[in-house]
Every structure is written in C-alpha cells, then in structure tokens.
Image (cartoon, rainbow, N blue to C red; front, side, top):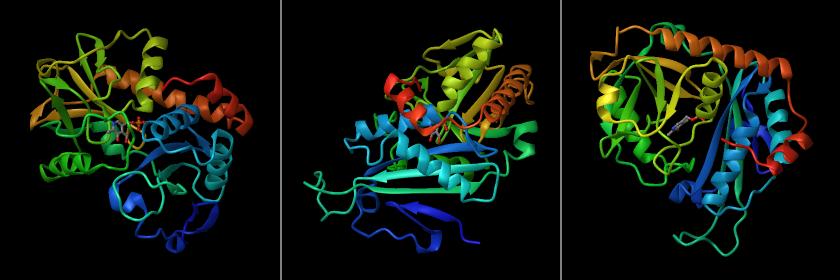
Length: 302
Ligand SMILES: Cc1ncc(COP(=O)(O)O)c(C=O)c1O
C-alpha cells in the first residue's frame, strides 16, 4: 500500500504528493531537511533533531513554517499513519515556489514535506562484521554544518565510495578528518575515542551528542578535537554514526585492514550502550508536543 505522506498541511498517498517545478528546492536545492529514526513509534533524540531543524532553517533564513509543537504533532501523526514500529522520518522544508531568480523571492510560502519509511534495522552483516570505506579529499562547500538539501558534493563522494566497492568515504580537508558523505567518523587510538569538533566543516550529527553522553556514562575517554590524517591511518578502530546506520565499525580503509580488521572492543562497548539508549528512549515514550516546545524554548544542544 502507498505510504501516507504530509505535504503542506495535507495527508495523501506518496504517489499523489506533487511539488511544482518552480519550487526552489527543485531549481536551486534551496532547502533543508532532517532524518529521524523512530523505534517502536517513539522518535529517537527528537528534541535534538528538532533543534537542529530549527537551526538549519535559521541559517538559510527560512521562517519556521510550523513551530516546535506543530512539528512534533505532525511527526507523531505521520508515524502513527504507518504500519511499521521502527521507521525513518524524513522532513524537508524549501523556500517555496517562485519565479526563477537566485535572490530570495519577496513573498514565498515554504514547502513542507514529510514521509516515513519502515526501518528494518541496520543489516546484521554491517553491525557484526563492519564495512569498508575509502578516503577522499573533502571537496564540499564551507557551510557543512547546515543540513541542506544541496547535497551534490556528498552524493558524488558517496558514489565514489560505492564505485570502489565501499559503503562510505572518510573525508579530509587540509590533512584533517572531516566526516563521511552521510555520517560522522570516530577514531579509536590507545583506548581514546576521537572525533572532530563541531564546526562549519561538518554536520553536527545527532549521534555526536549521543556518543559523547555514552562515553561519559561508560567512563570511556573521549577527545573531541581536530584529528590528523596520520591518526586515522594508524587507528586501532574506526566507526561511523548516522541516523540510518546507527553506529557501525569501519574494518577496512582503502583496502587495508583497520586495526585487527574486525570490529574492536570499543565498538562492542559503545554498540551495547547505543542499544541500551534506544531501549531507554522507548521505555520513556513520547514527549508531549507542548513539553517539546518548552524544552526547545529553553535551548537544546545538538
Ligand atoms: C554529512 C553528514 N554528516 C553526518 C551525519 C550524521 O548525522 P546524524 O547522526 O544526525 O544522522 C549525516 C546524516 O545523514 C550527514 O549527512
């Protein structure tokens, strides 16, 4: 059956959801998006995702078309309209439909689209045995902290990885680690977990904050600081995180084994903590939309 999606206040089957060709999302990639994992109908790290959505909107100067309470209610309804207990919610806002001109239109109504797809779980093979990655120069723009739908640099990088038989790329700018095409990268050396600091050079993945919390709880030493290429090349373990991949080990880089070439002890430890965090979120259940709005008003860290 066609999934029901949300478009500009309407609920309709995916095949009936249409956007005019002059939508600036189509013409310029002028929009932002979010991807939120949902476990047993509870959006995971929802406050953080919503806060990032609002930051992305502010960065590209699109007024929030819904507000925290309405976003939350809409996403809950979207999730409830699907059959699967575990899902991925995709939300996108563009600047709207206007005559083609690079400068912002004087008046345009943002286009709001959201869909949710079943999440069958990260493939066991990837969770248990890890994935291959390749290294690439980071050739994207300098505002990577915005979760923009303008993703051509990321798309081309991911395809280079796939062409090389890998699942993801590990990118470097000026000799330092940035991130993957659609993930953040974690380096383990001598028992210390490292990841680059939040800056305009990477997307502040929601799982960065999560892994920071997990390391703190588990007394795992964590260093959020610039990571040199040599540290990646000599890592004991590498991992990647994203909403759709959760946390998985990278066991080969450019065809060479990372560490022992199998998922390492730090991965196993953080993997267990990640799964426990998901279970705890499911047990807590959904936050009421009004409570979400007041939490967002108080400020939420990514
Ligand atoms: C470029 C980029 N970096 C990092 C991430 C990971 O972010 P999150 O943990 O919020 O999924 C993503 C997610 O798709 C991404 O596209």
